[in-house]
Length: 284
Ligand SMILES: [Zn+2]
Ligand SMILES: [Zn+2]
Image (cartoon, rainbow, N blue to C red; front, side, top):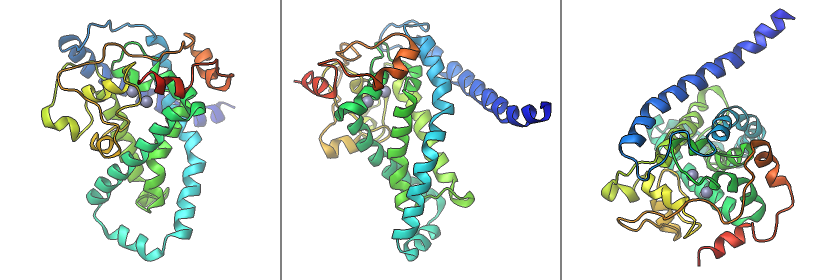
């Protein structure tokens, strides 16, 4: 029994240590910066911080389990339907070039997945947990229903796997790790409560001013990309007026405050006026 527990507890303990180290690094980097260069005055121990800390743990542990089977199926299908010569050509491309292509393809996939999370009423029920944040700071990045996080990551990774840029085998599995890690770390940055502006870089790479407008109560449904804002420009959803900031964040409909209620909220019948359609209407 003790041997069984020690074998299974070791990976769990390693995860706890990893989570704690990452959290310490994030706090050391962002808390002082958000204090000195705050875009709007907010407390560190702001509303819903307890929930967001638990989301941080859940979002680290649960989505990989949800994602494993769909990614295996897509990778298998890619092997069946894409000519082997294409895979051989891709394998010869240097890793750094494959990584750049995968980041672009992944963010285009994420853009459309994220846009569906906003416009398909059932998916919006999950994603509205993220958007219910009334204060946005670096930790808001973790405020995601675990199924929302799994869906968002899958929408970025599936095109990468489908094109044969990555596979869940030992030699090809580094690229998905690079994509998920880059997206996650960049996610903390774009949510940070920082008043800095970045000039022309703001339409090249995702920044806090760009993502702040994504959380704006109005206009809704803008700035879906995570890393690459020019994807929003191409598809007509870019919004980042110079020198302006949103007047408020959040969603028009109420969201339960307790974590357990937020986790089951998407599965309950939607009250009238709380769906994605009403969010689109808020845009007018
Ligand atoms: Zn969103
Ligand atoms: Zn966000």
